[in-house]
Picture (cartoon, rainbow over the protein chains, first blue to last red):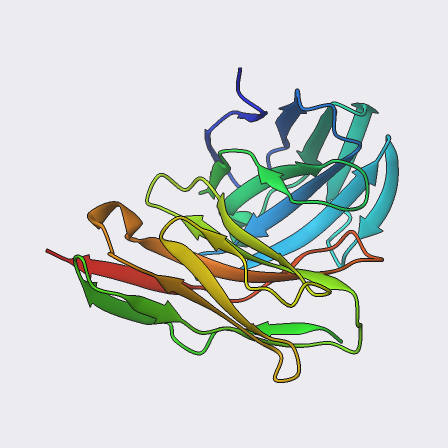
Length: 112
Length: 114
């Protein structure tokens, strides 16, 4: 009965590969987010979708492409992985535009 | 631009004592929300407490309370009767009511000394 889940929890890959991280929420929330937490623990928003529509797109390389097949899912695909992409990626969701964000457990990505 | 500043990168407190974590923010908005999130070693981001800017009363959740000073744009977190399980990174965060984006501070690592 996990509220916001992410798969995988850990991802180790080589530079240049393409990988995806999946996020699902069973809270019935309309809005979902991707955050990146770097090695210094700084959390920065990357994307936000509301009802499958992109509403926030921060300055993120276009190697990162979010996809929302339905409002319960927001996946993150990363092409041509670079060393600097190593981080923890968090998915989150909120009910509508307002309200508290509920976070997933995070995906630790390590690019070698 | 909105910013959130946590001036204490690390703090330590003796078990059972009280500790206050500082947070200041900058915004031109009048309607917004403030949050404290806890991130233990498990990495999970856990909401500790939330404050609506229009409410004058400080939010409390059991041993956790805030001191919200709207004019000073200050939002500190007080943890009473500190427990070993309180050891974590604590993030202060802001969101304008008209916005979807949450802005996080850089965090304060809290150590609990037995």
